[in-house]
Image (cartoon, rainbow, N blue to C red; front, side, top):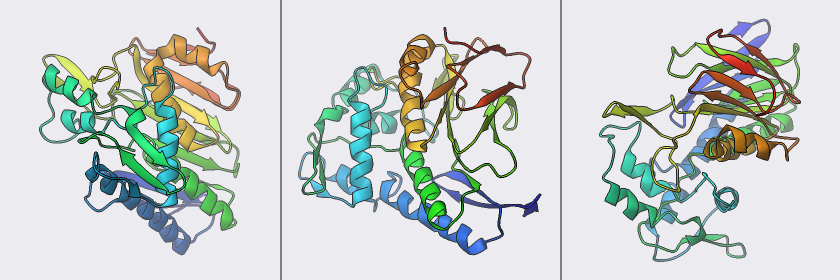
Length: 320
């Protein structure tokens, strides 16, 4: 499809609609990009039995598993994020994800004793990495790595690198929640920030960026309702329940989508005040917070320009 010399290509991968925008008509290149995404999905998924990740999980408590370099490096990165003090990121959260089943048939609030039992097998320090052997060992039976919170960011960065290698320096890849922009073809790229719990095309604002990743995590993405309360999919590995604070969504603007994935989770776990305080130490990471009270809070605007689009939300353009 052509629109102002922009060609869009789409596919469904990783359980999401994938969109690739190019400023040249090249169906062969688009097919290669989608094949690259599929290759990485096959390595990282926990939703089918034959991935390298599932090989690791099946061997939990028994023996190490030698894996390919991309899998080892992504697990290494995910463990480092998980070991940050009081981190809301945890690569070993798999048993809790499976227990809650949020977004799948049969989701419900599990008994407290079952949550407590699963917490005992979600310790990231029990993911043992052997750099020389290229192997991963889960020290306790029942442990499961889940890279769902980080895999899309890694893949988006690999797609960007591949396009650069092919001489493509203007374009956009949207992996569903992870948007990676390349170049400045006709001014800045404009990326929408979704309005929580509203129609799919309803936005609270738009972001203009150049050569940046935009990653959003929101409580509205997957949830169920029970006993008059919403239970969303962003689980807190510190207590085993969905994160419960003032936030509906966090959007991270960064150079690499992998950083966006990590920081959306870290910042979601910290909340607005602590999140802004931490971001003051990072010139390369910025955040947009959307709260339950309909506030939009910008940590800063060094790498993007934000335009509000919904009058029912209040914009704060400075840190708390």
